[in-house]
Every structure is written in C-alpha cells, then in structure tokens.
Figure 1 (cartoon, rainbow, N blue to C red):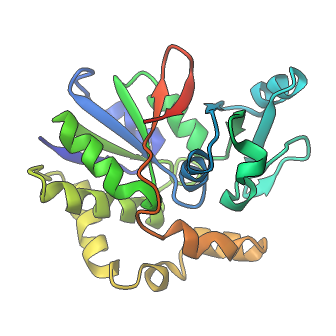
Figure 2 (tube, rainbow, N blue to C red):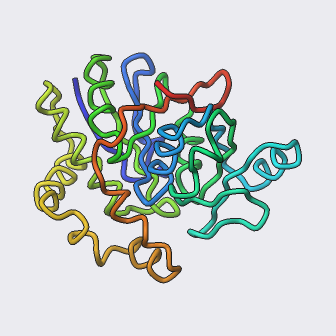
Length: 238
C-alpha cells in the first residue's frame, strides 16, 4: 500500500485516485480536526460539515447548534467557534452539530466524493493509522492548509502518520511525502518548538487563541475515527 500527501485542497484535483482503493484523511491541526475529534470524544452524536456561512446560517435558522469560524474568529451567529475547549460534554453529548470553518470544511467538501473519508488529528493518530492499515488501502492525506496554501502543522501530521504507516507495511515514494517525513524526523522531539514561528501559531497568538496549541499537538487521547458519510453528508464516530 502507498501513502501520499496533498499539501492543499487546491491540489486535490491533481491526484488521480482509485475510488475503491483509497482512504482520504483530512487534517487541520490548528484547529478544526482537533475540535472534531474532541467533540466526538465528548459524545457528540454527529457533525454536519458545510463549506459556506450561508449553509451554516440556514441550519441555524432551522434550530441546529452551529459551530462557525472564519479567520480564527467565531462568527457572531454561531453557538461555537473553532476551539476544542468549547465542545464540552454538557453542550454536545448526543447532539447533532453543524460546522463550518475557514479551511477544514472546505477540504472536506473538495474531497467528499472519496470512497472513504476520515478525520485525522494528533489526538487520534494511532487510531487513524490502525484504521488505514486494517483497511489495506492506499492513503492520501489531505492538508486543509490555510486559504488553499501550504502550512507546516498539517504537513507535520502527514509525516507523523506516514512514519507510523511505514512500520505497518506502507511505502512512501512521492517527493511530497518524503518532505513530510523529513520534517517529522526533525520536529518530533519538540513539535511545539518546531512550530513556534509558523504562520498559524502567530495568527492564533495575535488573536489570543494560542491556549489550545499544546492540546492540538497531544497524541493519542482518543481512539475515535470520525468517518464521513456521502449519504447523510455528515461525520459519525467509528
């Protein structure tokens, strides 16, 4: 099996995927896929990802709980923003939540036709690796990035996941995944320090939102793998 990485949703169309033989792993470390995994860890029923604010507002008018964020800030009509700390058990357990974010829900929308689409974060990285390996399928990691541009943190996750998958029989041959692996080899002893001058860390700091950085980089605190259903257009827990 092969593992590869797509650095941006804008590049996704460049990958020719065998729909029956690929698992797409969408990742947005700061902070959406971390938040999604946290919500499922805290008992959310399911999450409906939508790409636009207009869709989110329509759901809000229908009475849904809505998480909405643009450019790291919570939207004024929303019940939640994009901080994992907002999605506590008392607020989300057993509930259905609609979510739209600057980058992650766009990435999900772009890749929604994949035969299998799952959500990855450092919080569930071992569970994601096990799911992929047990499925015996090729893996494409799709980084949400920032406004269709490359970012460091999602790429690091890609390198970390590829490193684990290589130990489980996967091969990594593309230039992109080799770069990701090299970054992970350099960063793994102190990921927070490696990322301290990254664009998104600076963006979070400028808005007083860097309180979740350490948490977002914490590995294996849940074994839940959120899976996207094309039929219901929602995420549920595996």
